[in-house]
Length: 256
Image 1 (cartoon, rainbow, N blue to C red):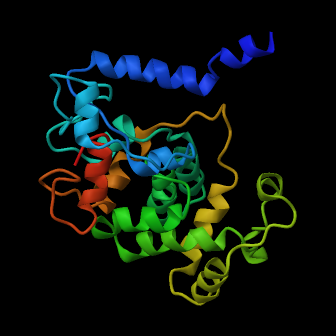
Image 2: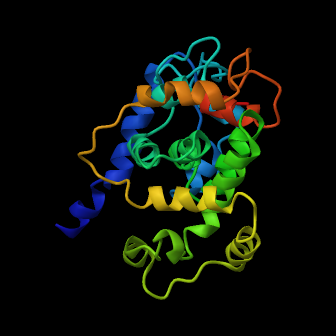
């Protein structure tokens, strides 16, 4: 009985087998990044020739992934919200709180974009990633605030009613302490001219996890239009220093 139990594939192995079957149904060979594999504790990477040997007659995917929603030829930020971000409810709730609180459009936009790295790339250091993604397209106040909220969220500011979140105690344990680089960035941010914009991200962030909240991206179309510099070539198809990050979302499984 024990041997039979061990012979059964694990849920992870079943998922891998199903994905392998689905991959064979596609016209091209679709790959995953090394970073993706690391999340499952895998550091090996199949080479192009090895993958082609497993899939005779097929070429590597070098364009759009057919499993994903089709993007327009000149994608906008709103297209990424609708077709590439994993979930936007939290972002929309944060921005809605800021809007109802009467804050400036830059604060609202910062709240709307503060976690875009989480919903498109990775959680680790998401404030830094998110700021870099949008830096060429927004005012410094917005990108700086998104970068700084990475550190500020771990430190209270009673002047705006922000305490250390109870949720963090539940998520990280009562003994968690931020890494030294986070502490250093917090100290640097405290006297910055845009400190309060970053702090307001934290204030509007922590109360934005209501699964029943009714929010709509359309409510922010005008604010995006006035405060996000959409490149005429399409976001990700321009020559900005962060265009490659948007292209990665545009074609996340492209081989090279």
